[in-house]
Length: 216
Image (cartoon, rainbow, N blue to C red; front, top):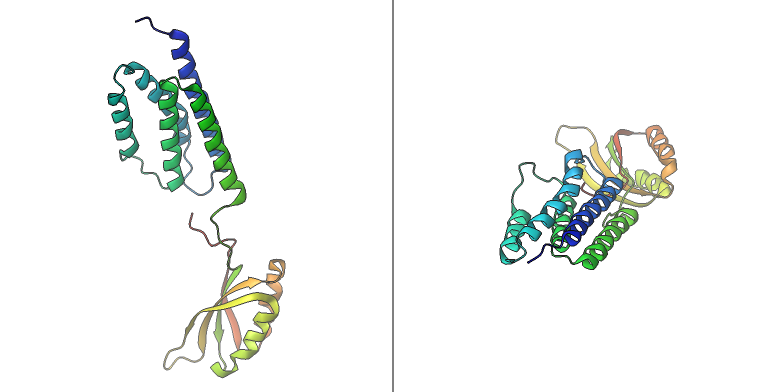
């Protein structure tokens, strides 16, 4: 059976090009602390290798498909920290398989759709939750019955004020409070802190700004 060299070359180049596109999307959209240059390089090389394996064993597709399944579930020496990285690995494996079996239209359309989906998720910050802007830890030295004075200040500056914790101990003067606030104007957070510092019997201990409630 004659070897179709143009088709083989086109499949390898297409796998390499799609790997590049996915790597660029990953570099552009990645956030967090788990970025790795070697992982980006792997996104480019892996589809080409997978396509080559599919071409070498194209007369017996059961074997290469079994090999790709093993590659998909193998535990790599460098454990992936980001769940989305696993999606990229699976995508380049599938693209390599499509290019290696000369399903060029499927390869191009699949790569384009996955890239668009990744960009959409990144651009829209889909899945993130914004429930509060700031966490304030306070020490209330006055009676707990007088907390309405504090609540009035918080309500003036925030749409929503949630008391996350309230702690008081025997022999310990005052009460430790922790509030989560969704501010009316996040740019005026310092005005709220200034007013709290000037309030009688109240001392803000620590504050923490939160842009979104999300686990990276």
